[in-house]
Image (cartoon, rainbow, N blue to C red; front, side):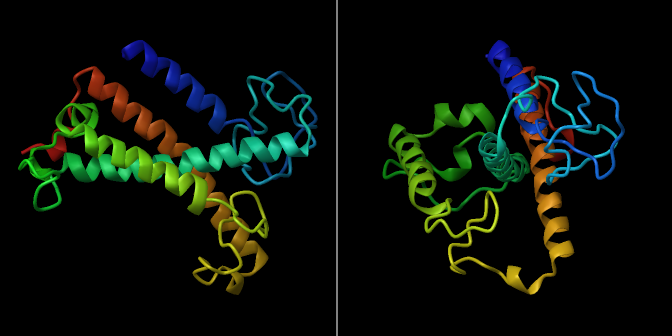
Length: 207
């Protein structure tokens, strides 16, 4: 398990840094900082790393490949942000009232983290996987193909929250915030899982 988590950490790190690019750049070209990349002006500019592509994923990539990787990065970031919040909420001891099944297994009796899979009834695990699959296939996607950018799931205003009221500068800033928060969350949830397997507790949340 610990070995698998270390591999996961490396994988998430690679997926989260493929498109770091600064608003301004130098003419230096290395295997890590490729300032003359055609993607250096794309969303994701983060100083002081510059264009950060240590695995050269974008070396010979076209725009379609860049968009695919950006979509994957956004999706992983969004899932990870929810995961971090969910982990911390449960670690704080908050649970739903009532039972999770008809046999009297209460939500309060389900442990946090990996141990939850041992405590949950098999039917509950299947329902969770089915719900995630449903969201992936039918909900969390650009259903109509009308998105203005990669990861735009508004679907002709079905879920807008006033996005069109922002100016272009504000839109870019908000998208940058989401992207970078997602990158931090990917590292955060990985660290939480690794520390759990190492036996390190979130002491401030334990009574």
